[in-house]
Image (tube, rainbow, N blue to C red; front, side):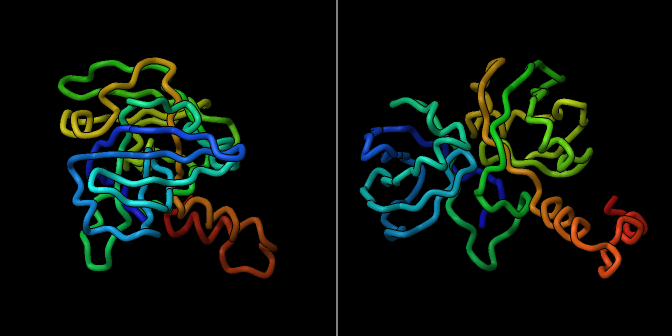
Amino acid sequence: MFTGIVKAKGCIDRIETRGGDKRLTVVSPDIAWKEFVIGESISVNGICLTAVALTERGFESDVSIETLDVTALGDLKVGDKVNLEPSVSLGERLGGHLVTGHVDCVGSVDSIYRDARSIRLVVRIPDTYNRYVAKKGSVCVDGVSLTVNEVSDYGFEVNVIPHTAEVTVIGGYTGGTRVNIEVDIVARYLERLIAADEGSSEFTKDFLRAHGYA
């Protein structure tokens, strides 16, 4: 489990093709890798990957065909910058929102422009996922927890403060950049609950609406 508060930027040091899938080597001087063990979960651009090997500079991780198909990891090249977040420890402050690292879809930066000192991103996502995004709710973009400012028929807008733009890869986005999107986990479970037989469940649309969830 993650929070969407990126701890460091890293760099893709090596990409190997192995039997149809890939092994990534990620390095970063800003994380104390000696404190990690093989099997650790680490978020790379919002994707939960498992460290299968560790070095003084970073870690290696195998990326399955499934992950390559449903995320933008396959777009990465050697030298590309990525957002890194180790899994959260019990007792740590949850500065963002609950993030699983299981990406829902790939979106694209529709436009990007200055909004005072901040950056306003307009992100386009597939229609089937737009219903999970709510104004003033949370969304995870390349592993970064962001607050939704506006929702449209094709996506959403978020405001990125200068600090976030500096310490994550968001500052390097341009129009058309493909990004990994994870919607709020609460939205997924609410849909599942109300999709069940409403006649036998207390979690009806009226119940959710009365309690501010719909």
